[in-house]
Amino acid sequence: MTRHSSIATRKIPLLAAVALASLALSGCISIGDKTPKQLFRLSSVETEPAGTSTTGTISEAVVVLDPEADRALDVMRVPVSLDASRVAYLKDALWVERPTRQFRSLLAETLRARTGRLVVEGGDFEVTGRTLIGGRLLQMGYDAPSRTVIVRFDAIRTERGGPITQRRFESVVSNIEPKAAFVGPALNQAANDVAKQVADWAKT
Image (tube, rainbow, N blue to C red; front, side, top):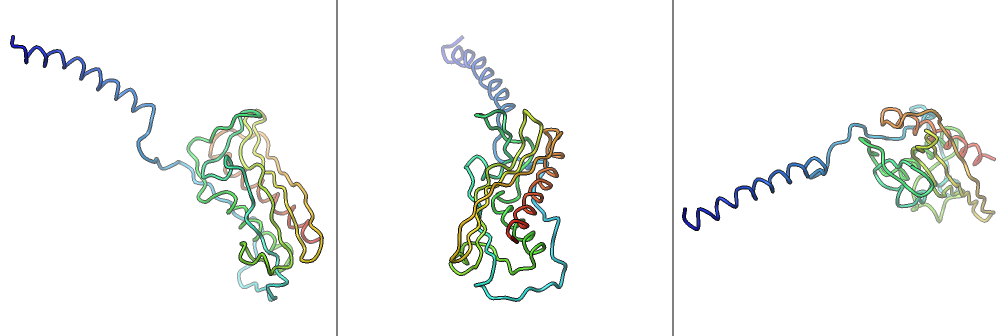
């Protein structure tokens, strides 16, 4: 056997080992994005009927601002609290849009339906609106130890030339399995409940 054929023979087991290792690794990681089985979106239970119109000036409007949120929450994945210090993400599920933006739209639609006032969204109207509704979205996800879906929102209401008021709102949906098919509807239910609480508070 020549020297070259001996080296080639020794390389075959090495190449086979590398190939086997690559196959094993491919079972643990994913190259590229996978389409999730569930896409979550928030939809308002209370909406204005088609054809409803509201007249007013921007100086009389309610302005709904984007809520603030921690980085672990304001992402496209759905957070799962494992304990007080650990967070994972729900398998096979993504938001169709950032949850803070979705909650803003849900809250605005609920305010329109429950208050009858002119409601606009976004910071472009912040300097002209009469009432500003903003705050911080503290939780919108699944709590594994209690098997609950929780939405918690610290709302801040600012009246033009008047006081600033802060209040915490929360909704909990219990006995939810940690699966996308159950968590999604529960999140929508809890978010709608919080939006209704905030809208009723804004009317006072």
